[in-house]
Length: 126
Image 1 (cartoon, rainbow, N blue to C red):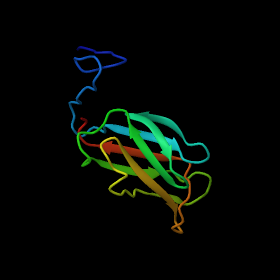
Image 2: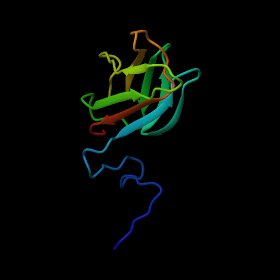
Image 3: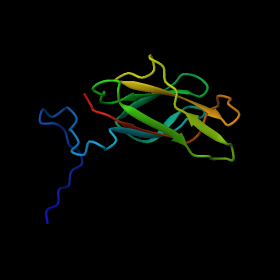
Image 4: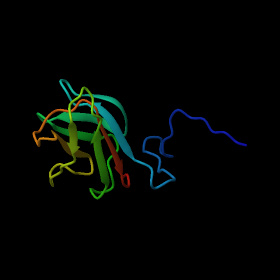
């Protein structure tokens, strides 16, 4: 049996991302705290987050997607006893090859910051 161990894998040019062999694998994901000063807990292919105000967040990719036809899902955990849910809402200006935006709201329909958000993105990298 063979074993391959590596800390970093890049394309043959030494800088570009490697094409994944399994097309169904998520090409980006993150887990972040959306309350107070927002912060990434862990991520893949997430360069940064942007806080656009209450319950309005953008995820900015490290490596862009080939087009804006990728699919993303978003959810959150119910922490601290508040019944928050995530609403993955996008407009033409909030889903590009380099980023996407989400809004979060509680069960009453009021936009509210959520403390444990998770997203996953599937599509082809540029």
